Picture: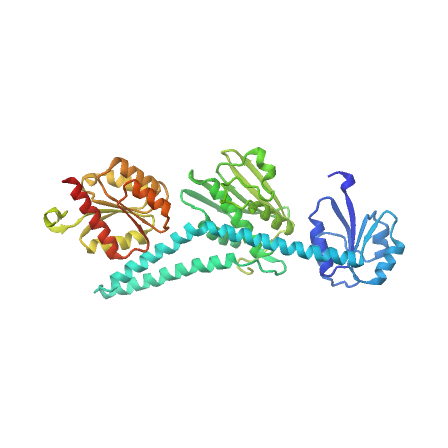
Length: 350
Length: 144
């Protein structure tokens, strides 16, 4: 990034607006947040700042005058603050306050709504490709149920009757689990605040969903999980990321078979999730474009081109990074890295 | 019609014919076998296209197999590949496709390849039995 693009920002006010600004600006590499301040020490934005290792300032005059700040974002909504800033800001700094900062806050809210819409549309578009998998997984147990029920109408052996009735009950349970998994997946991501998400459980849940989207036939699977690995984020959104990456990995091996390797690791205080395939690989010329919106190598109507774009958006929102390593015909590995690794007791959180 | 009816004796009992069921789901093989055995058929099983090809090439099966019932979505050699193999190497053995995913284009393509019936799961026992009986009858008529 060129030095001239570098912007040093101070955020005043750490309520919902300040927190949203912090989350947004923190993702932009050319922006350095030199500090955030609020009169209320329990303001949500201050807690967020500590998580992101952004300095929390207690002295507003010091923050705005002594750190080479070029942009002051005032979201306190306090007219006195506005007056103070216009009188005391360094001549090189711009101030955004009052109605301008309210407008900025509205735009951020709007963007976050659009982002959620985009995520949901892409997810629902993807579910269209589940039809074959769902039909297979529902019609097979239905065939068993029908066949056994037809037999039961004539069956004389009481033991066989009991066994077959039990088999029917089990088949019904398996079938209803399909609907439960899919409705849970297809719902809109809950707007909850971030929670600690056990990664290994989410990976297993994602594997179940991905089986509808792609055929796992002839694919060997290797799972290497670091017990208790957990990351902070929205569980529904993380699930969406994992389903996308696993589905892509399996599609890359379609018709040729291969090995799907899923790993979670913990090192240097970071959680890593690695999803590798031994499939067709990505053209080196295309590697830079794969996270761009509407980029797809799939046939028209087969892919939205939004899968990896949304994956990257979510991962960045979780303050993680995504890396890809690929060789033509040698397979692809996607590595997600999240800071501030945490461990949870297996099954204690969802 | 009676004199054309396929029928030979296995172990002293009348056998309506020998059927190979190809499906990766043991549940499906179990109920198809249950239904057809009760109707007097001898039923062989294979869990994928590769096993099906092995089975048909084993011993005297190539001579005695009357019908193949084949799923489509399977590991190893899938149903579409198996159908193509059977049509090429055993054109006289009638093929019935039994699939969980109804797809008109696929059905048309199979029927064009000479598949005698395209059934969608779940299929009723009566329908399955009459499809098998019809397939055998057609083959017997073709032999005359």
